[in-house]
Amino acid sequence: MGAGQSPAIFSAARWRALPRQLAALWRRSLQFRTVIITLSLSSLAIFVIGLYISFSVASNLFRQQLDQVLGGSNQATTAAQRILDSSDAADRASLQSVMSSALEQVIRVSGSPAVAVYREPSEAFSQNAPPDIVAPSLGGVITRELRERVEQNPDQQFWQSVAITEDDGSSDPGVVVGSDLVVPGAGRYELYIGYNFENAQETLAFMQLTGIVGAAALLALLSSVTFLVVRWVIEPIRTVAATSRRLAAGDLGVRMPSKGEDELATLAGSFNGMADSLQARIRELAELSVMQQRFVSDVSHELRTPLTTIRLAGDVLYGQRDDFPGPTARTVELLHTQTDRFETLLADLLEISRYDAGSVELATEPTNLVHLAGDAIQSMHELARERGSELRLDAPGGHLDADVDPRRIRRIVRNLLGNAIEHGEGRPIVVAVDSNASAIALSVRDYGMGMTEEAQARVFDRFWRADPSRMRTIGGTGLGLAIALEDAVAHGGALDVWSQPGHGTVFRLTLPRTRDADAVESPLPLVPDDIEATGPAPTGVVPAVEPADGVAQEVHDA
Image (cartoon, rainbow, N blue to C red; front, side, top):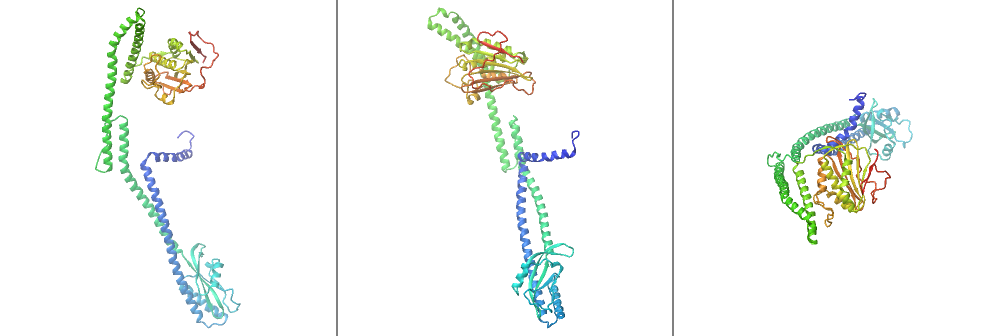
């Protein structure tokens, strides 16, 4: 924990990071997802079943209690009515005594002290009629609706769910059962008996608590079983994943342990068979690759001797071509040209074979890319003039030397220039050089025909041409860009391309200043600002050096 960071802030940060950690665990762990999904669905099923059971038990328990209290209320009403019918009381005191005896019989038979009697409002006034009696627990509980129904339907029972208040102020669920009594000499009375369902409520609560505890125990047991089963199933899958990663990393001898005869054993056997087949195929391809590299290298070396002989003989004939008749002289010139191209192709094949064999070693030295680019432009000046293209060097400044192999970098620049001259359609070609703290970059921009995205994806392939029907007009071998890419990668750099049909092409070479440079960011943009232009805009900058014919060189201050 850093200085000044309170534990509360640290804890809040951990809580905020928890959802992201769980989401990452959900994405990465099949075992975690399986256990969570199983527990979620099991919890939902247990909740639905428990809810149904709880409602069913509550309903049955209430119905059972209700049937009991209705029967008890009916018996209590009958007993009370029997006492009233057997009485011959005529004065007020006698009627009150008989009413008290009837209510005591109601309490004794029903088992509930919550009793209330009301004289029906429709009865005529009588001084001898006993007054209304209401137990404290039923005060304010009996509704007007219940009283009206009892009053309008003599000799019938009616009930209503209520909350019965006890002496301590607590409230319990219960019902009130209403019926009527006929008091001789006083008229009709409404009899209400309240029943407390506290015991039934406690029974239901106990059953629900037992169900919750049982559900929690079931979920815990189910989670343990699910975890063990999933772990038993997932572990071989993890073994497959780890084995496949090692196989992908190049450890072709790794295999899965195979036990038993179940599906997992079949998976292990199939995986091992695939690994055996893959190892055999890779070994075969590696042997073929080595044979191919050796063949190219051997053939290239073997061709040097006859090519040298042909070259010497061709040079002799080429030096005497003026003495030959016209057709023979042209044949000698053609022989000389194709011999030069053959030599170049042979040298490129030898270079490619060295890269394929991994035997290339760089002879690095501090090199200024501005001077190197200027030399390459000067050497390509005559070819560019023949094709009608102007070569321009744009060096904004701030350049330092980079540790590179100058021969290979010069070859890259010449290859890029030759490609731009061939496809630039006689328009200007701009070579830009710039640098930053970690890298130095060189780009070659032409305003010619451009390439499609498909062509850009294959432009560095060996012997590939965007238009197979188009002839190479400057003697390329078809390996220049492939070698240029290998040279760039060998320096720890990159060779990128941007192009659009009709708007030209940009090749950008980015090299680290030193071989141990970590992050390298190119100081030159790959996509040009003047995409729609047909040539470079005049900058108005006076050249710092006198340019050679056909070569415009601009050097800007940093």
